Picture 1 (cartoon, rainbow, N blue to C red):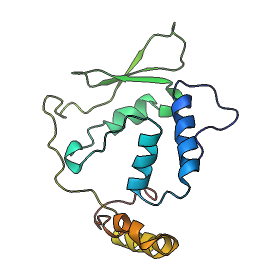
Picture 2 (picture 1 turned 45 degrees about the vertical axis):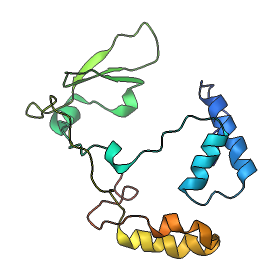
Picture 3 (picture 1 turned 180 degrees about the horizontal axis):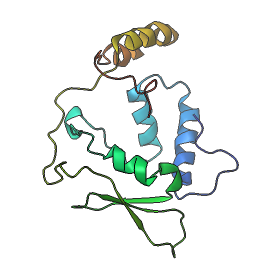
Length: 167
């Protein structure tokens, strides 16, 4: 994993990414989530290890008709802002401080923005065929003591594969 790539502009997070990269090189092999979180802790990154209950069951309330009709495209947005209580997306086409926010209709009129969705009670999971393929391919390359994470990875055949179905 390389966070710092020549040619990219400077960002305030570059020093953090540099520390993570340095710790990854020191660690050597990073086999599972526990290895990765220890790398982040050693890089002095404040991490919050989240549980399933920290995620909400959000529904898609976007108004796809309005979005496609108005030409709202993420590629044309440099700064995006969502405001509490509003159904609109506010955006700037560039990072210029002089640019004013433009407004675009984003959520359906019937979509409730008043109530917070319920927390998830179980992990989303990945398709069982993908899980089996990961275990078959990756696990033989790592020590037996580091396979627990992959063997316990939740599966759910109704979950879309986010790699194949990325929109």
